[in-house]
Image 1 (cartoon, rainbow, N blue to C red):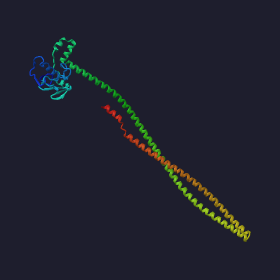
Image 2: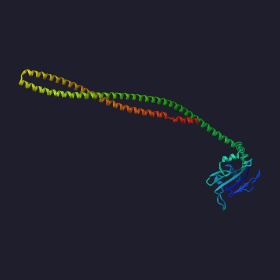
Image 3: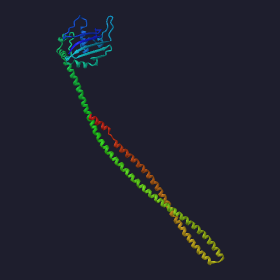
Image 4: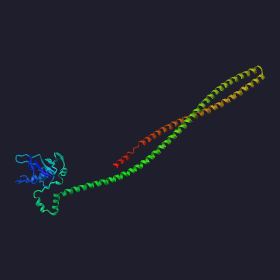
Amino acid sequence: MRLTKLELKGFKSFRDKTVLDFPKNLTGIVGPNGSGKSNITEAICFVLGHSRGLRAANLQELIFNGGVNESPAQKAIVGLTLKDDDGRTHNITRIIDREGHSVYKINDQRSTRENIMAIVGDSEYNIILQDDVTKVVEMKPVERRTIIDDLCGIREYDEKKRKALSELEKVEDRISQTHVVLGEKQGYLRELSKERKEAVEYQEVRDLLQKSKATILFREIESLGKRKEKIDVLSKELKDEREALQARSREIEAGVSATADSVKQINAQIRSLEERHGGSLVAQARGELNRVLDRRDYIKSDIEKIAGEIEGLNSRADDLKRERKTLEQEHKAFGEKLALSVKRLEQAVAEAGGEDFSEERRLREELTE
């Protein structure tokens, strides 16, 4: 690869655009002191990104600074054309402005110095600057070795090797860190798997417990329902029996009332007979009266017995009412408890069915990446 052309504009002493062609393998540039010969060498160093040999404290000092009746340039542009062994042409350009911004271009496309060095490759030019030969002769062996390494390109390879080793060390550190993280996540995954197994077993036991509770509650409700039906039947029977006794009591009371009227009539008849006929008829009447009184006493006893039975039936009916009320309350409470258990069971089943263990799946995905 050889240099075929150099273009300068606004670079140091070259205010206007200047084009230098290098048609031969050997080109000599001659001229008086201060005519800009060294600036051409600096321009080549500049466009290739070499800072050594640039006689300037900063990049802005490389821009044409003006002269007599000449205003300073706002930027410096240096371009060179290289031609490789295959006949392909590469145009490399570097531009800087007063603010210190620097831009590299390859074939008018923005690029970087690394890309330029990739194009130049093994054919990178060795530039010997003014007084370099004298300095090399006067250098110490170690310093001279550094210059020779630069000229042979060894230093560049050493730099690439250093960067490669540095990158390799970083990669090894990342691999080591990755192994540590991987070990931690694998341990965490094993722990999650264990917890998942325990959670599934717990869920199964809880579901079985909920189902058992629901079965027990359902059977208790069935038993309460049967007891309630039995109490309802007994209540109806007691009601019918009480109504029958009350009807019988009313009949007996009516009989007692009639008997009392008969006693009054008989007493009146006895008094009348005593006044008219004397003792025989009176004795007969008294005998009839005694029979009526015995009948009354029997009826009274029967009434008292019926009243006792009615009172017992009322007491039993009250007990049945209280028991029925208690059963209704228990039935309601068990129904609510059963509904709550069924709801919890449905939620537990839904949760168990929808459990996706997202944390475990996420860790598995990370470990397989």
